[in-house]
Amino acid sequence: MKIIAAALVALSLCGAGSTLAGELLIAKKGASLMEADFSTDGALKAPWTMPKGKWEVKDGVLSGAELEADKHAAVLHYNKKVHNLIVEFDYEIKGAKFLHLSFNHPKGHLWRLMITDKEVRLQKDKDKKDANSKAEVAAKASFSSTPGERHHVVVEIVGSQIVARIDDKVTLKASNSAFDTQKPNIRFIVRGESVLLDNVKAWQAEAK
Image (cartoon, rainbow, N blue to C red; front, side, top):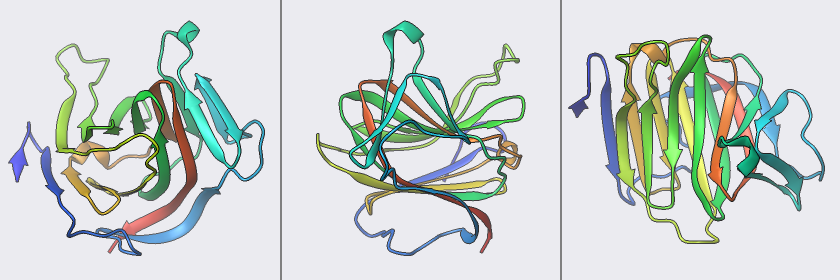
């Protein structure tokens, strides 16, 4: 176990010993918050919003890509106030530099799961209103992904605890009292061209 700054604890594990098959580590599923399989082509509807980038539903998947004119990574919101929750989704990186699953607190950035084709991280975000604040990596692990591979992600958020898993290969854990707060939405962020998302689901959660 590694301590990074006050009250920030992280543990990262890699290997083939874990599994996602019906198993939750810290949370129990409550009411469904959303379920999107993107089976119908066309534009996303509320409560989805697309502040930045190009997001398109086609051929049963959602594609997200950065637009050069935005001068900002592509951003997608599912606008539902949440506190404790479970999120699942499938993704495929198709040329993008990264995919983030991100959460804010009511006044700014909070934390994110950062995925590339070589590494995954859990990061506590910088407080932009505090000049002395810095982003802090809570947990990270190597993760090799080849073009065309689809991966499955499960993220459990209960109070100050986060567990994020990809396939049966990577499990990241982090704890920080700042995480125990209401979150305005569920956010996906893409840098570059492009990422495919599918089978996005979320539930309210409580501790096991």
